[in-house]
Image (cartoon, rainbow, N blue to C red; front, side):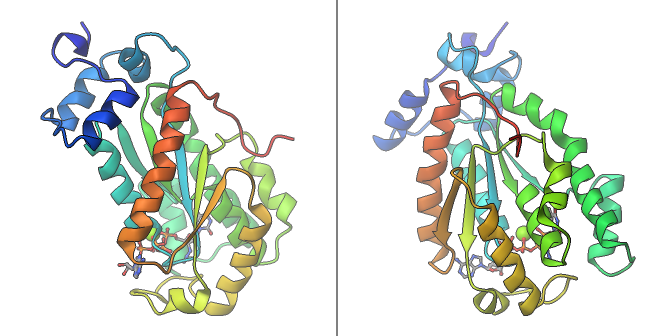
Length: 259
Ligand code: Z5A
Ligand code: MG
């Protein structure tokens, strides 16, 4: 028995229309999500037809302290408030055993060869790939705080070849949208907490910024990260909503850096 017996499923357009006319969705988003997850594909339940409907894979990238974590969690709250199923993910995922090795390295508690740590970061994404795909196909939008672009930009900035760095990432799921929060290393360093972990040094961050530029492709949108948080939040909401709609309407999933 699906959720439709309890909550009438809303189409994407209906969710937005109701929101904009100040209709307050009385349904708890958690209860709503719990019910629709009883089916195999949330979006097909919502629309009743499109079997290619899925959640969107949205990645936030940028230099340390540009505001990725702040904006990622706000985006998830925003989507949930509209009745969408959405989850916040982050890489490195420090909860796995691979992630714990990474965490120990980042906090200077262990030393690893540059190639080795690069492959561990990549392995940390591969160990989550299948769950990521399952979630997306069941209609959940994933807001991901750092992804393969961080992996390649940071390792290339250390001097590893960019193509070598990209190779282990090939075949991971390609994001539908990359939100790059653009800030200079100098401005970022003025923000709280800068300087505690291994890579948080101005010169190194400048190199990372250069490699991010090389990775820029058509899935990227660049946002000025020096604006007030609320202004950034509004801009991101618009971009993400458009992307969620596209994926909801059946935009196919693709893989990263297959050429
Ligand atoms: N790394 C890698 O080498 N290879 C990989 O494959 C991956 C990562 C995935 C750990 O990352 C490190 O791993 C990272 C890259 C490397 N490098 N380092 N070091 P992490 O994601 O765990 O790092 P973090 O500790 O979460 O820092 P962060 O992500 O760089 O910060 P952020 O998330 O971008 O910023 P924030 O926490 O949202 O905000 C920082 C502060 O700025 C905070 O006080 C906010 O209140 C403030 N803030 C945010 N927005 C604004 C605006 N608009 N105005 C003013 N102040 C603001
Ligand atoms: Mg962060």
